[in-house]
Length: 176
Image 1 (cartoon, one colour):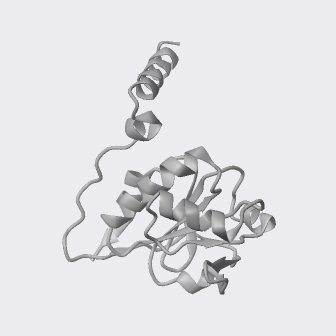
Image 2: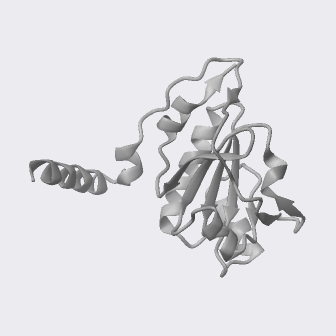
């Protein structure tokens, strides 16, 4: 009971402080050795889903094998996504060799709404859209945001609903 009250009080303080949960649950990232690139092996094969880039060119997830990937499935209207995607972008900027692959996955979006989202929230990564609802579910998506850490071979190493455990994920990477 005390633990539950302590956690509730800490979450309330985080929410009231204006930093939100992202400020409470994340810390400054651990430094990455300079001149290195990330490597990650293993995982269960991810389904080879399809989506489009903002030029309407079709892509498959398998095209991105060869380096670790943070696949972020988001909806442009999702308030948690509006907080989490910039946080993931900042983490990626400090983690060499990891590709950030944001894919807008809601059925109700348009390309124009995705472009507005990317601009408003300063997402520098090439962003995609048009993931079919069945593919969202095949990737383990049940709500937004859903993030997956994929190995260099395309295996799902970890999955997160909500704020991804970025420092845990950094600990799974090896830097060479």
